[in-house]
Length: 332
Image (tube, rainbow, N blue to C red; front, side, top):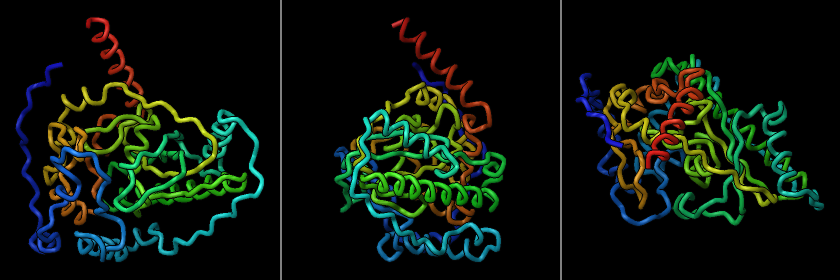
């Protein structure tokens, strides 16, 4: 497929203020993320952890302080994040992997499981875990939490950030509830939500678990929810079955679309994929994105304007792209 002719950006590029540039320091986030590296390796933790251990921790601290100063945002930020998992039951529940899958889906999508919209399972890969971290648990249950697109579409205003954190909170609660559900039935389980960094990157795990494909804006595009959802995860040794990846033509769509690229104020979204830690994929320019992200309540413009995120559009677009892929396969 020949990409459409790309037009030049017509809107001015946002320039980071001097004080934010100073906080960024001399360390490139793109280098930390592994741009142009041929070898597959574990990712470096760059955000949402102990700022004293991060190259750009000062930017994170500034952003967190501004969030806490906002009277509305303060109400959705978790300040007491303590949770004591239930003990692992001595007796394991006897069930087949398919029965376990049904039980997990039923629980996660119930009120007790916080009404999760997407559930999938993958086998964790070493390169998904941040440097120095690993897990011996053989499965990860991925959870997807739909966002209110009307609230998301207010980005970069604070109302969008509030909705993002509401869904992060729901995801964390859902992951912990599901982990407790599994542990009470005799198997180990560890629940992790966002935005605070857990042991692993959740995007590649969610793609492998069938949530969709990576979009140009660096977020997953799902055939039902578009990019308007957040992730949580549960690592476990319960006997499960990995779900299949879902490929329906996002790459082809993104190659011919410039909506998020043109809408990004700091021009952080490139028109082409690039090599990152041994994999050619869509990747957002961290060094351009972070200053605006920190100055605009976490931004979110790219996923808000994504055509796939508009309510009701994703299923239609997925069907269109699937038909195109089928016609091309027949022609070949």
